[in-house]
Length: 200
Image (tube, rainbow, N blue to C red; front, side, top):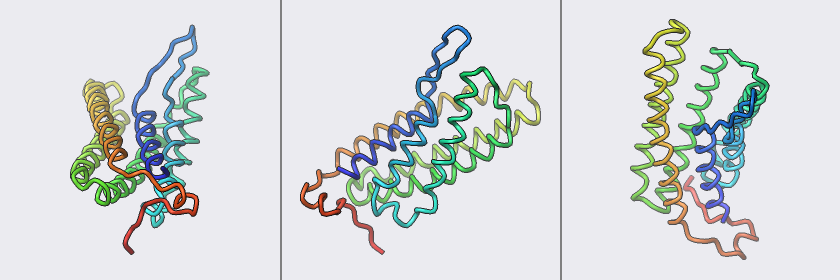
């Protein structure tokens, strides 16, 4: 069940980093789906994906770093303190793009082994997700150049709506992929076999 659990963690990771549900309590704004929880899910998923991420361990520190950054942002937001550091936001976005490119590559390999018909869909979703990250990057740069520009507000809204659609498609695809993976033999799992093999 290790690989299946890894895919579940990835799905919840996408959900938490992309969807905001805010609860207003007097002067306190509480995000019920904080992004740092999503990055923790991604960090946990990296080991659960077994040999599919074994050759990409140099990227496992990225979700941990982003979890720390987004946790600080979440805590300051609860205290009504704005963390207005656009350059840091841009840096975190670049790190996210690098990590997602690697993660989607791993997911494509999982699909290739267990559900080949889903591999092209995961590739398309990777392209869409990275394109949306580029759009967010463009909106941040535009905000630096002209903070009051109407185009910035419109681009932000359209990007948020597109992200919501893509995240739903990603989660549905991941759970379809999870369903296609056979259950592990308990004896083999106890011996340390995860049911994943990658050609060298």
